[in-house]
Structures are given as structure tokens and as C-alpha cells.
Amino acid sequence: MGRTTVQVGLIVPKGHARANLQKEAHLGPDLYSQSDDTGQVLARLQKESKCPICLEDLTGPVTIECRHNFCHSCIKNCWAREQQAMSCPVCQHQCQHRNLGSNAQLGKMTETAQLLQGMKSKRKRQESSTSCEKHNRVFTCFCENDLQLLCDQCTEPENHELHQVTSITEAASLHRKNLQGYIKFLKGHMEQVRELMNMQSRTMLALREEAEAQRVQLSFEFEQLVLFLDRERQAALSRLEDEEKKIGKTLLDNIATLEYHISMLRDLLSQLMLTRVFSEVKMLSTVSDFYRNFNSQLISPSISPVQLKREAFTFPLQYSALQKVIRRFADDVTLDLKTAHPNLLISEDRTCVTFTKERQNVPGSSSFTKRSVVLRILHFNSGRHFWEVWVGKKPECAIGICKADLAIEQRRSSNPQGCWSFICQGDNFSVSGADPESQLTAARATSIGVFLNYELGEVSFYSMPEKRHLYTFRGTFTGPVCPYFYIGPQSEPLRLFCHEF
Image: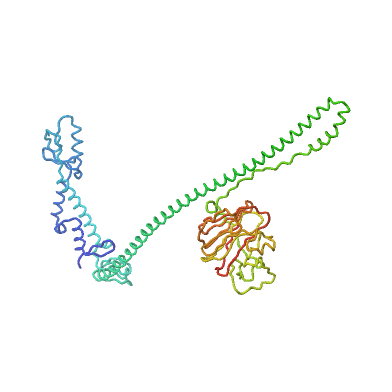
């Protein structure tokens, strides 16, 4: 049985190993039929490629006048130590010039000798691997259980008695077929990995595009924020200036009143000073008028009170950290069945309201208004509160707050005083109870967020989840207020999400 070479777990015929090594070294096949004479030739080649000075392989070989070869650095250092004479370290020839001619051909021969030596060492290692180290005999069999090469002595009963042992030829044929299947598997797996890499590349491209889109959006939003803040600053300063002028005019009126009062007191004092020189009869004749005028002037003049109202400003929800607070202090919302209109169907968890033609009969209920309205159970007397209402794609509804103690005659009105609501009619939006000069930001929204700041007297509406500001009511609350929900016959159900802080 021919000799074999074991390489990386595979059984490869020696001829194949030789062919691969020959291809790598670009050498002819004669190198692998070398005899001991070939080894001597290789030794001579290696000897000739040594530097006579350092006795190592030539590095950057150069040739001097006498035709001896040295490493460039070796001969240069040698001659540097000689002050005048430049002699050859081998034959002691006196060189007339310091010219060092590079010998590229000899350099390539040196590299070839190094390559051949490396290949010889590798071949010896491969040949030694074809023999059993334990018994120093050639491998003849293969154990399928241990996947191990065996020699004749390795197959003794005490070693592999119950194992499946086959000849090297049979085992190599079997495993070549098996490995061929692994090749197909690995190629398929590599293709999957390549596809995964392509997917990651596409994802990276999509990520860049998404990040760029977000950068553009953020830049736009910050530009809008700058414009918004500038408008709010101008409006706040204008309101402050108007208030200052109004109070200034009141103060001027108060000063004029006080100046007139002082002039009257001055006249009275002059009259009193004259009585000091009057005769007794004349003085007594004027005291009646003096006492009457004195009593009338003691009354302080009526002046208007003045107080500069503090101009307050709060950031819109999307420009502050309130969203984090909202998430932290999430709370439930429950609708008040007792205030629901008979045509409104309230879900069991009281977070969803639907308009229905069939009237509901809830014991103890009383409609808050003649319209299809329902209120939240709890009222607000202070603090800041946020709740969210899903209105759908084609809403017919109104969302807002109203006074909890709204009079009955006000409830019957189609536009009652004491109610502030954001009205959705399809893609159209409007507000009820707003300042006629206020502006509403038109925006399509399927969910509306309501933010109440009781102390500031503000109710703000936002398009969710992007938190785009739509409108803010500003006023003063003097009593409890309650969330207010109206739903029309054609509207989708309203679903409530409340976050209170």
C-alpha cells in the first residue's frame, strides 16, 4: 500500500501534495525526486548564498572589484572601520573605489535557496506524519469511531476491538464523498452569510437615509422653534408693553387726583393762617365755613389700584421634558356614566365611548347636555394634567374642558360659556370658546393630546404622537373643571389614554 500524507484532518495522496507544493513554488517535479546528491547540491547553493562576514544569508547582496559578494551593510561597516585601505575581507585585494555594485540576480538565488530549504523541511514533516509515532510503522487503516489513522499494530484487539476499522483507500473514498457534501454545505452557508452581509449593507444605507431624513426634520423643527419663540417673545413683550402703558396711564390719573387734593389742602391751610390776624368777631364769623371745608377735605381722594400682571410663558409640550414626566406619572381615565348622553355606549373599563342609535338606560344617569356628551369622573381643582384621546381618521367630535358647576341654562346652549373645546370634523378643525383673534394650527391628527395647567389657566392641544402644537386657550380658572368629550353619529369610537402628573 502506497504512502500517504495527512494534512488538516484530510487524507491526501502524496502525489497531490507534491503537485500543490510544486504549484506554490513554481518549480519543476524533479525537486521531489531528489536523491542525496540533490541534497548536496542544495547545501552547496546555500553555502554560496552566505555572506563571508556575517555567515548568514546574503541581504541586499553587492559585488566588489575582486568579484566577491557581501551583504551591503556588512561590507559598508567593514570598510568604515578602515581609515584608508579598502581591502576584500576574503582575498585581501586592495579596492581602488568604494563602488558597491548591487547583485540582484544573486539576491534572487538566495531567496530560492531559502525557499527550497523551507520546502525540504516541510516535506520531511509531512513524510514523518505518514508513520505511526507509537510503533514507527506506516499507516494502513483508519478507525471510523475515533477518526484516527492506524498502523498494523494499532489494530490489535485491545485497542480498537469493537471499532469500525477500514483500509485507508476505503476510508479516504468514503470521507472524500462526505467532505464533498460539506463543500456544498459550506458554499450554501457562505452564500447565506454573503446575503446577510448584503442585507446589513442595505440596512446601513437605509440607516443613513433615515438618519439624514431625521437630521432634515430636526433642522426644520428647530427652525420652526426659533420662529415660534421669536413670535412668542414679541407677543409677550408687546403684551407687557401694553400693560405697562395702561398702568402708567392709571398712575398719571392718580397723580393728577392727588395733586388736586393737595391744592385744596393748601388753600384750606392759607385760610387757616389768615384767621390768626383776624379780630375775634371776624375769626368767629369764618369758623363755620372752615370746619365745613376741613371735614370735606379730610376724605382721601379715590385713586385706582395698580398692579403689574406677571407675563408668564410655558414651553409647548414638544419643546420641553414634559413627555418624560407624562410617561413616569401615567394614570387611568374613567368616564362618568351618570353624565353620559343616552345615545352613548361606554365600555366596561370606561375608557372608550361609542355613538349608538339605540338609547342606553343607565339608572341614576342624567345627561350633562342635550348633545351626545360625556364627562370624566374626577374634576380638577389644581395642578397640571395630560390626557390623550384617539379620534380616528374621520372624527366628528369635540374634546376639551368645561366648568364642573356649569349652570343648566348654559348646558342647553350650543356654545356654552365656560366650555373650551377643540372640534374635529373630518380633516377640518376649529375651537370653541377661543379668543377671536387667536390662530389655530391646521394639522391632520388621529390622536389629540390635552394638557391642562390649572394655575396658569391654560389648556393646550397637541397632535399625537408627534406632539405638534395645535392650539392653546388662555384664561383664569376659579372653580373645578372637568374633561369634556362630544362624539357625533358618524364618528369612530373615542379611546382615552390619560397621563397625570
